[in-house]
Image (tube, rainbow, N blue to C red; front, side, top):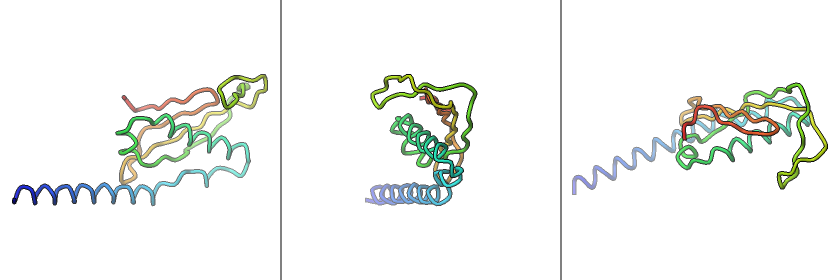
Length: 129
């Protein structure tokens, strides 16, 4: 009975530390959207980058250990970027090309890997899975 009680306490402590880490991370790390200039195009790019970074963070372990992401930087790059429809088909219309960097954060707001999102691809640097 003593071993079972010890295991229950250990599980409770680990769960409490995890929940505390989630709370700290959520309080400290914002989405970064509030720091983006009021330019509607940059707001749209920031939301697109944040959404695509989360969509590409598709490992179940990563979703548990990296509970927050923040848009760090947006910049325009030379040249046009072909637009895509919702089905993924390219159109003839073009828009200015951009790069956005989204940083993921580990529990307790420890900085983690960076996702680089541009108008045609997403890559997450620093995740080996």
